[in-house]
Length: 444
Image 1 (cartoon, one colour):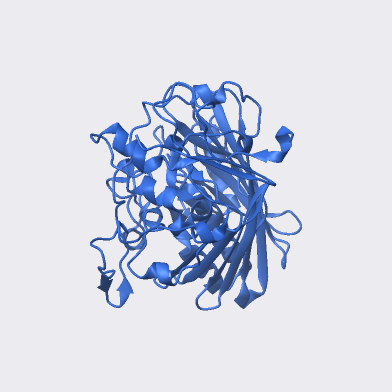
Image 2 (cartoon, helix red, strand yellow):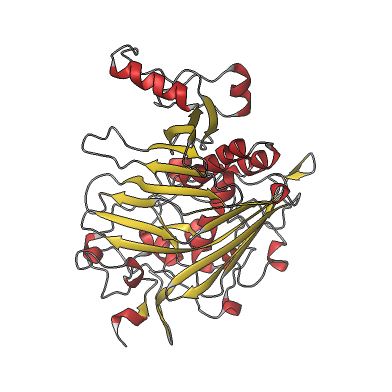
């Protein structure tokens, strides 16, 4: 079998050099074999404890069962030094660089700011709806900020289902192709106000000092009340300093959101960092009609917030800025009193142009986020398994994967390394089109 036909999910002992152990994504290809014992830990409390309720709405967990373990004992260079320019889905990777989520659950994070979709559905004007949709498209990548862990590769036929009555949506995703890996998802509003669906084929490449992820695939949002469909693709994500130094993430590329009914288009430019880092995390763009006339200007940072302004006011401000009439110091964002109640406060460095309107602001992360793989509050809840849920879940659901569950409950710093290894190291697996080979690992 040639190299193009193989797809590896995990590391083998011969592939992982200079590491503290042979950690791997332990998994089985047969969907019926995905099992986990919920009596050991569901991340919510004692065995059999019902999820707490408040005003009839289920409360979700606010922390993982255990903090993340350190990655300083593992060498990624031993894996990547022979893989420059290659597509990373064909490279075995140690579990130490994962986060306890499946890629299907990572896709679900698009829905964290679903209120923007509901707001779009209520807007009477097409321009106002496009503003909300553009903010939603940017918010979909905001959770990736400082998220340097790799999600687990889904198995063929693996699924994930989520219903959030408090947020007003239901969501389902499935791994529909193994080679190449393709994930499909579908979501709908509980009030029948929107449909959100698409498929993603993440193309990963290693470029020596960085890893680039190009999320190929089209995303579609339908606003049913207006008979409108919007389509776009996500920007490219790049993780820097994978060999040495502190890991950091940037998004770059052009995102074009098209309203297929009116012909309006929103063009968003995710700026690359640049030589001195002045453009880091910046997003700039505009909304135009079908005749390419600019109707609205959008600017901000995908890690913080997004603002919008009329084109005339924007051009006037830029002319003053070029003449040196603008203030020397950048005007930091100040939300109005009524706006502060609607969105969480955050420190940011976006220069706000007078007359701008806030379109979106990132949610504040939990105070212990750094010890939980930099998860947001929404992300922390994705893998929780309340008592009794396993009886209604499909046997292919991500929550029932024993490897992800073990990593989530693995002890953090200060625990014996052999115990952590035993929790994480279920086995070594190589997956391809026509074979599955699994070699059992011996607990450390």
